[in-house]
Image (cartoon, rainbow, N blue to C red):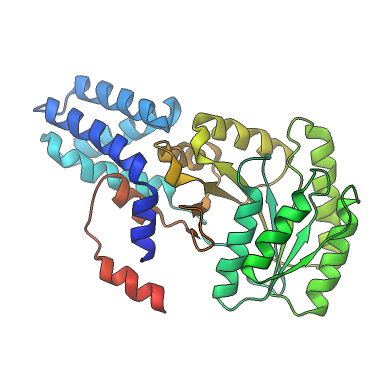
Length: 316
């Protein structure tokens, strides 16, 4: 299955809900007026896009309608697709420009952090990269064992200590191992103790300091893993984590299990944090890079792109 097909399949619940609402709205109006915009804003809010972002989308659409002089409601979907894609464009690619590069993975327990690290390790390995994983979530019982299972499945190396060990010491050893083994990427797991922000912030600062000392000048990503099924709560989590550390990107998991996939839009728009990866299933290869244009096309049931193109890209 091609990447576009996987994303489309993963967003099935979201699109069936969202597209149906938009279709009903479009078919209920014969012209674009203020009543139409009010109904559209309500539809977007009910699709987990949130009040702030829904208002901005409608404001942009008003401006586009005024600029083009469009009056037919059936042309709105194409306009919306363009607006959403534009809102989501940003620094969506991972920065892996140094050897090794470092990816620090953060997120609350239950968001899919451990499985994301396993899937990301497998994704990078398929690209020919040598990956080392640091099991620095030493706080949660069984976290190290669970991560060990996923790194085994992905076929990558793991650096671990005993449960309860100092996370910074694990990271120190992992940095040493990454250099010694010629790793391309070091992925660091962390504890998800958001309920105690001060402790978490101090821990992340210490880990970042160790990485800076051991791997000076390395490309450094801090990825926040969020569970798409939590809807607007994911936005709240992102806001709290943003207070604790400098997040460079979002990984949105469990898109296949929810109709709330529209949450990608407010996360990106309101917090100015790009979505870089999305989880569209439970298999090892069900994590993929986020492409705004593909997401917008699928969200608005637009099949302009030819699936064969994506299949060819998959084989490269």
